[in-house]
Image (cartoon, helix red, strand yellow):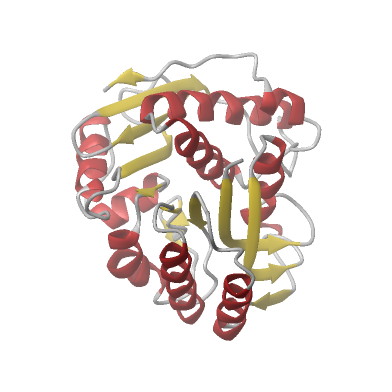
Length: 284
């Protein structure tokens, strides 16, 4: 059984952050331990929310508590997402190091949540911590187009630019790891109007998958994509195969969700487990 330690946001209502990841991962047979970086009533896209960012001391205490009972032993991977504050981000990265000390073979996947559609929506200091501290620790990262451009310093307009940006980012990841960059939600100059694509690079090779563009209103697709790809890669250690499998599962959920406000994770769980569409990864 694949075991993953997850650091991400938790919401009482809806399916974003960890709440877009834990159930799908468990439905696919993974064992997930969650340390919540924030506890909100709902995601901020609703216009208002209540809740708190987890204190750094809480992140540390929960991780130390798991270590004390051996729950950090034998992990296959560690995944981080929304970090809440700069102080919480530092605590999460220290916890990642603690987990990897107990499970030296575990891979670390960083979903560098910073912003989207040209706008930074995280608190000050987080983007800088992700760039300076998280990326050099990470084995793979899963940015959206805005985050890919911001972290690489390269404008993302066409496939060549996206490939260059992903290659630059891959070179900054942990030496000795797979150094994978998964860019999701790309609409590039060459992308047909009715399509959207994902791109995977490892510093040497590049693959992409295109799917029909669906009328999506729900948040959390990026969180789901990061978790699904990480699980597939942990199991196969094959980037293009993991990319293809992730896209098929993600598309199944998004197709079932349609124009709904929240991802239809429960309703689409069987389609997630056994998707009916296949989207082969192609060199780019």
